[in-house]
Image (cartoon, rainbow, N blue to C red):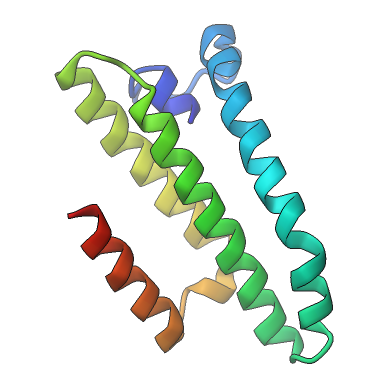
Length: 124
């Protein structure tokens, strides 16, 4: 989100106060969504293997983060050129962070593939 609100810089400035302030409502929305999912997923995890539980939780975090990022991108720069650059760089950073931080999602299940296909159709 910082990348989007900083208008897509090549190097993020983590001290950019305006970008950080613009991101706060989206971070709060993400936290609220994750809080709502936490206990139901925790209770379901008792009936699953550790790997299955981790994959489900990471999928939920990814999906909530992706929805929040989409909303932040829509609220980002108004100039079409800057919007495109900011979105492309923010999405690239997001994908890199997902790959690095969520190893359980590197090998998607058929359920993830189906959801991704549906999400792509919905976006078209």
